[in-house]
Length: 115
Image (cartoon, rainbow, N blue to C red):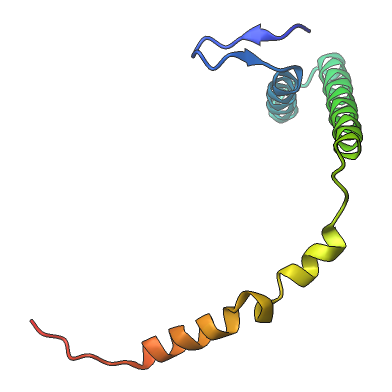
């Protein structure tokens, strides 16, 4: 498949977006065929095969992009700091406890309603 031009003017649609659309269409078609009173097993098998291949191709593309992204991150010097980020987001360090206590105090203030 080739990237196609989006008619709404959003630019080129990538291969993965096209695969997602194909998967969605074939899933709905598969459900439609299963609900019909007179089922055609040959058509259902073809639809299932196409759906499975499209899902596998999409998964492979996603994994390939993830590998490329991880390679690019390592080349640019970004490291996985997920362990360090836990310490950064602690409530005491960000002052969320004081914000929470302020909001509780604010909720305790009762002003008379004037109409």
